Amino acid sequence: MNRKKILIVDDDILTLKRVSILLAGSGYDVVTAKDGGEAVASARQVRPDLILLDLLFPPDVSHGGGVAWDGFLILSWLQRIEEAQHIPVIMMSVSDPAKHKDRALASGAYEFLRKPLQKEILLDAISRALNLQRPTSPAESRRGKRVLFVDDEGDWRVVAGAHLQDAGFEVVTAKDITEALRRMEKVKLDAIVLDVHLGKENGLLLMEFLKQSHPGVPILVYTGHDHSNDAVQEMLKQGASRYLRKGTMGELCEAVKKATN
Image (cartoon, rainbow, N blue to C red; front, side):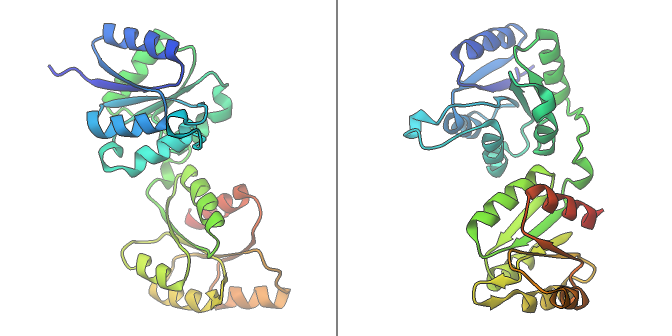
């Protein structure tokens, strides 16, 4: 029988050594990585059967200290590479699970465990993950639902896209009308979040096209501009299902959840 390979990603040398010995003694082959760069490289080269991923990391010193890794960022990178997309990930941290577990599961982690790891709990979680007995997460009902987020501001696309992914959505972003039209041709959409001020372009023209090409798909207008009540009502008449001012990411995610239920 082939031994399963487990990649442990942690900057703490003592944790790497202790957990490596535990897993090796339990019949697993072990590979280790100390930061995000090593984790991604190992996932591509070794193709582990499971990844055990710490939550907290110092800056990525092996790449000049400029990358502020954390487990969620590493998880996001792993999910974007073909070789690691289907590898179950168990996250771990010294932090209270109540603070991070829901986000970890919603982001795609199989389980979240508290350090120091207890042998029986860890081995049980690994066994379940390798047998694909995935526990349900708050975002399971939204997994696979796809949102098109259109905004000409790069910072908003990155931040909002990350939060929507954490909430369990697949996110496609576009910076202008041309990019939005090109990307929506290839995917089935469940919701559209649209900034109506796309630089010199009028987002309302795009909304009209989206309404015709994707009938029934809710369009949420998301803007940082002030609009009169009459202007808001006109947007709703033209096809917007919701008008939102740019505010907290929590408000955005809740609005998209309601629109896709």
